[in-house]
Length: 419
Image (cartoon, rainbow, N blue to C red; front, side, top):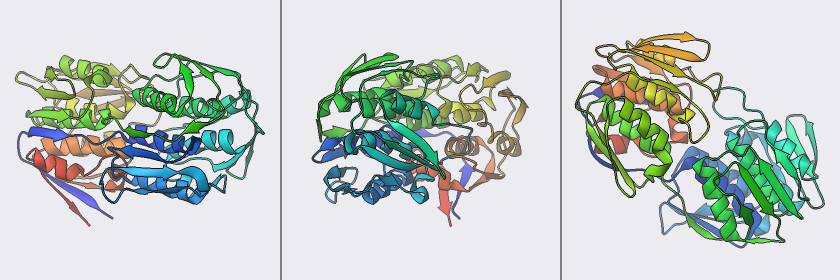
């Protein structure tokens, strides 16, 4: 099993271009099932999760593959879809695979999708997805670990989500695009990945109003078409690279990302003492004074993203004073805390709140990655630590970060992967 070895060797400096957004890509790949004709996606990251979604689409009967002439582009043609079933052995690998259910149900009238897997960061029930499909007239039942849904044709309805759910909003929104009549979705997630999906669906021919708000009105149409789209830059990768630079007291500029979608992250880094410079599609962060402690609570967009919590906590381990980090999105997303403590961090847990007291420095050690973002947080800490740190079980990081060692080496890091 691969591991990553990091030698703390001083400040990271330079420019790094982020890959396309993993979370946006996976939803857009599922949406391609709705269109007649090919959909082409550009700026797609080469990640395990993307490969898994390609396997799922092929298992359904779609043609889907990487473009041999363009390294970061892939195409999807759903014309040959013959099986409405997404098998357990593929769906168990990641939660976003459940997003094929809405498009399959809307276009083909039935779907059978295994209940999803993914990182063990807490309970993420699919009940809001199913509530939405039922409101659109689908018959839904759970049988032996599978969700089965059917409808001759979905009809418009009203759905008020009980909580903000990104995948739930995306799944029901996609299904509603081909439903008969108007659908109104209330308490929708407003994450940039939801907005990007909505804009692409509009280009495919969907009628969606209220994009970017928590209330969407969707007028069903008879059909959608395939399109070409360039995926937006990954805001979480961008934030991770900026924090890595700050943790090593360097100066890093990330390219290829819209600063507007990173506002809550950048605000919190400014509170920590970072000096932030924003361009049209770039952000630079450095620090000259002391690293200040902060209070932060994760929240749905536009709040501070849960996917940045582990990385920020690694940074706060080096702040001058006591910080408070509250996790309000997932109930089991502090599994990186014991590993940070192995590096010398001073962290006390109380329910879903971490009290982080800054220390003078961290020291290299053997640590274990427990999920995707925990892996990134541990690498941030390792870059700032004295000596060598070995991060084990890094297959998690390959789900969400493309060529992370290569990109960090480009900034001056001593980092390598070992089998």
